[in-house]
Length: 235
Image (cartoon, rainbow, N blue to C red; front, side, top):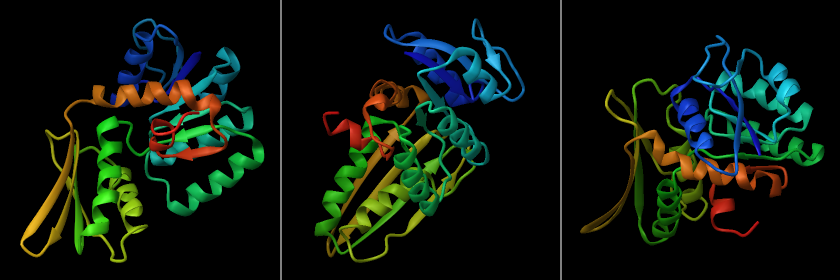
């Protein structure tokens, strides 16, 4: 599979490039960076449309910004190129609209707020546990440069939990140097608490999930939101 990395010069983009290079069944075909900054032996384009036309990728992996990802999705839908999207910041109504458009156009994409296997399991366990507790709160910790707050992971965790819990679940955001991506869900009953916590101490922790999504994206229908839909099912 020829993989094009949009946002190739970013912290996550560089990590994705490294992971794809080391995967024997994938080919790192190119990167996109608005400033055109070259990276090792990777040819970097300034424009996504130009890159798609030149290298005809099987999938575009996007780790850019909330402002940039919307146009990238438009471009990939127009050219019918599947996407794996790790950029967060899209609103729930936007995601619903994109899901409808993707099905109508026959476009394939996987968007995951978090590609860490442990984080996906943390969300699943929190959803199961909240059925048995009166109250719960979410605290998410990220590096100081993260643009959106609350994080996409925290918002998705809250959504999954509130589907089976009647009370609103508060979310607290912390942004500090030295952090990468961390989240804990604290659930309470009289006399006891349960804490479910996940820590990503480096960006390598997201790569198994990214590679899984790259390999599975051709098999999905429309826009799939959440890595759990391919992690826990056979597609």
